[in-house]
Length: 129
Image (cartoon, rainbow, N blue to C red):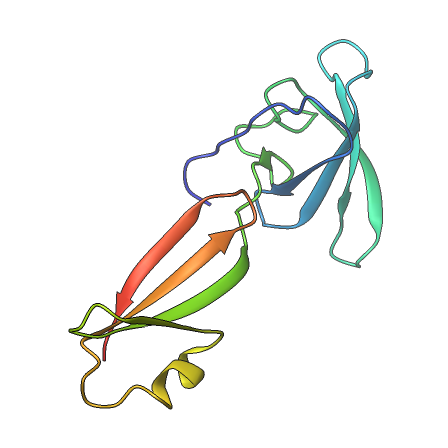
């Protein structure tokens, strides 16, 4: 992963990903000393393993970069729609690109994909007609 971004949680459990993109969750901030975050990560064998992290989300014991350092989760696409756009200003919404292509006709001037992400943001992209 590139630049690490970690936002300390304010409620628990809180989901994160490790440096190697494995799932991790912080269950409590009642750890001890330099390791306030107590939780678990999904190991290579598919089992949850206990672990502790520093207030900055870095794994303990500390190394320069640990495969268990925490990153904010990458938002996933919750809902996706495709819009056919026509010269008349008419816009038709469809649940998939193939559904948008079926009724498109020659008059369609653009197809826009809209992704509503799990973190509440919206991402749009114009696609080839």
